[in-house]
Length: 105
Image (tube, rainbow, N blue to C red; front, top):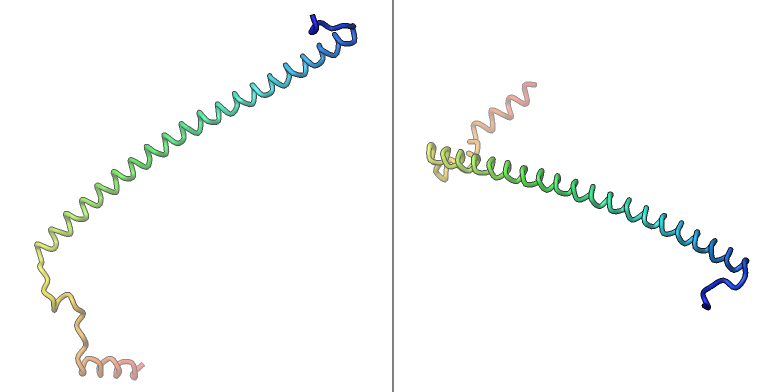
């Protein structure tokens, strides 16, 4: 019986407070629904990005395999010796030819 309004003014206050409370609840509920939609959209975007990432990883792996295969074939087709791997130093006469060409210009 303590919860019953004692006067019409009390009843009005309670009614106003109830309306405000319901209004706040609706606003919060709306906010939560909006957040839920945003989360759902972000999850979808994440899945798409993960699929793209997976696709790129597959492509990279495939290219890497091709490159390794071609490199191996090239290595087998033309084995190099140590002297071929190192750049050849110009001889003294080749150096002099370069200097003379530079002086002509």
